[in-house]
Each structure stands twice: as structure tokens, then as C-alpha cells.
Length: 367
Ligand SMILES: *[C@@H]1O[C@H](CO)[C@@H](O)[C@H](O)[C@H]1NC(C)=O
Ligand SMILES: *[C@@H]1O[C@H](CO)[C@@H](O)[C@H](O)[C@H]1NC(C)=O
Ligand SMILES: *[C@@H]1O[C@H](CO)[C@@H](O)[C@H](O)[C@H]1NC(C)=O
Ligand SMILES: *[C@@H]1O[C@H](CO)[C@@H](O)[C@H](O)[C@H]1NC(C)=O
Image 1 (spheres, helix red, strand yellow):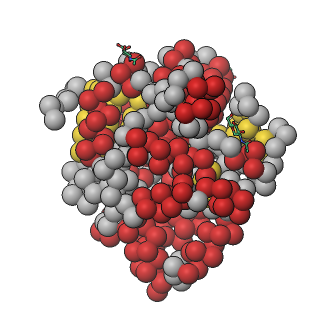
Image 2 (cartoon, helix red, strand yellow; image 1 turned 30 degrees about the vertical axis):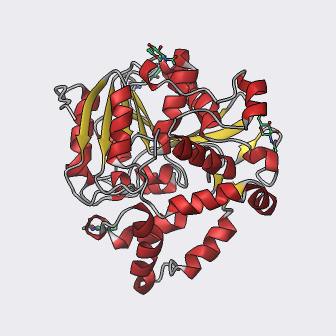
């Protein structure tokens, strides 16, 4: 909120409690009485800071506020601003027993319901980045009545399949899944707690000493998410690195690896016996993307090492109502350029703002 205020905007902090007791923070840049509410939802390993990193006149949250929208920034459970629970503490295993499934059936519905009740109108647009899209798909398939309160969705990447994921994080995630019991014992289900990240950042040269910045960026960002030095403003690095990366639950990582290995976007796999008990079938049920009928716009990057264009197109082919499907016209556009790229306003946001205004002519080209 201090950063938003410094940029010259009003800001409010709202708190919502989910049906399973997690206490979440929403940051808001309030619009006027007639304004249309929009909700921005971050992905894994970061929080709502991503929507303001680019600063006034450039960051998507500010551009939306400048155009008169009522801007709400989500913080999913377990992240910096949303680590409280009515009875559990983040130092307990039980607190971390969730994946994007629970975020989709509890966190997003709680936030959407809160905003639409307060504003007595539907949510005009939901904007998700990476796992911020996955959690919407989960809500839309598992709790369709609540998803009906959302009029359109903007996808930065489309997080359902990752068979073609090229990032070196892939073997690291596989290793985590294979060593789940050990890691769970070591880190109580939180991968990684902030103190571990701080050691990692130091080892990788991210001590925010400007001379080390390039080393840090190469080690932690470009290697894993896609090389694109031209779009990254190194001056902003200390700001980014002071908030990102943040912890994620081990269960989320394991669930994600299951999705990659099965090639199916489906619920958590407990193994045949427990699946039978929980789901009444040996295999976990799939999230039926074809049943999501609200208008969708999908944007993807050619150099996104997490969500490869091939995997994004597979989502596109299943969704029945895509009104805009667009490869951002920058060959090195990587996984975080959606929120960190210097040129994101020109390359991407201008188009997104038109779509949200309803002023963009449907232009889906056959792929
Ligand atoms: C918005 O509505 C409230 C309550 O109806 C009213 O008190 C307030 O003056 C209005 N604000 C503006 C800017 O119109
Ligand atoms: C996590 O949740 C699953 C499914 O509800 C349950 O079977 C399991 O025992 C839980 N684990 C912990 C550590 O609470
Ligand atoms: C880089 O970021 C700094 C600090 O936010 C800003 O002053 C500068 O204008 C940015 N440079 C470019 C090329 O956008
Ligand atoms: C998925 O949803 C579509 C559209 O509602 C429906 O036709 C199809 O039968 C569903 N598939 C499954 C497996 O339920």
C-alpha cells in the first residue's frame, strides 16, 4: 500500500476469510461509484507486487486505475500478505496442505464473492498471470455458479498443461516430488521459507549490489523463465528481488508435476486406493476446460519457458469462447515479461485495455 500511495493513488486493504479458514488480503485502488471492478491474480512464487513493479504510467494496475476501473489485487494463501488462518499457523504442516485446487475452490470464490457483494455488480474482468489463470479454471469448473459472477477473463499465459515446459525448474520440481517426505519434514510443507530464499539469493549474487545484479538475473530469472535482457529494467531489480520469489506449498509443486507427468489438467492424485475413497474412481477427475463459457482473451510469449506456446494452444483449443488469442510480438517475451517487461504497455496492455473496454473486434486467427 505504501508503494501505491507513493505513486499518487488512494489505496485500501480488505480482508476476506475463506470457507476453510485462510485469511486473505486484497489491496484495492478504488474507482468511483460507477466504476467497473477488475481483479488481478498473481501466479506461484510471487504476490500482488507484480502488478505495480513497472510503476506509474506503465504498470497494469495503475493503467486500469487511470482508466477509471475499480482495481483489486489478490494475494493467494501462503503469500506475504495472506499468511493468517483462523486456527492454523504457517509453521504447521496442516497450514500448507493445499495446492492450486484449494486456491481455486476457496480463495478465488471468497474474493470474487466479496467484491461483487460489496459493489453489487458482477466482476467486470478477472486478469490472471500463470497460476493465477489455473486457479480461475479450477473455480470455473468446480464452482461454476460463482464463476458466473465474472464477465470476462484475461489470461497471461494459460496454466493448465505444461508437457512442453523447457525451464530447468522442471527437473528441480521432479526432484522435489520424488523427495516429498524428506522435504515436508524439513520445511513443514512450505517450499521455500523466506530464510532459505535469502541464503539462495545471496549465493546467486542477488544481494542487491548493482554490480552483482546481472549475475543474479541470469542465475535466478533468465535461466529459469526465459532470457530477455532488453525488456528488464535493472534499476527495478532490487524492488523485484525484495518481494520475489516467495514461498509456495510443496503440495502445489507435487500437484503441478502430476499435471506435467500425466499430461492432464486434473485434481490431485493420491494414488489409486485413496483416489477411490475421495473421488470414487482410481484416476483423479479432470477439470473440464470445455465447460468454461465466459469470454476469454489469451496472451502468450514465444520465449516462455514455463508455459510453452504449444501448451497454451492446447488450452485455447479446449476453451469454447476465446475472443482474442495473441502471441505478444516480441520473440524473447518470457514468463515474467507479462508484468516486468519495459515495453509491456505497448506490446500487450494497450490491447488488453481495449478488450476490457469491449472495444476490440474479436480477432481469433486459426492456429
Ligand atoms: C458514492 O456513493 C456514496 C454512497 O451512495 C456517496 O456518499 C458518495 O458521495 C458517492 N461518491 C461520489 C464520488 O459520487
Ligand atoms: C492433507 O489433505 C488430504 C486431503 O484432504 C488429507 O488426506 C491429508 O491427510 C492431509 N495431510 C495433512 C498433513 O494434513
Ligand atoms: C527503469 O526504472 C527506473 C526506476 O523505476 C525508472 O526511473 C526508469 O525510467 C526505468 N527505465 C526505463 C528504460 O524504463
Ligand atoms: C465437458 O463439458 C462439455 C461442455 O459442457 C461437455 O459437453 C462434456 O461432456 C464435458 N466432459 C466431461 C468429461 O464431463
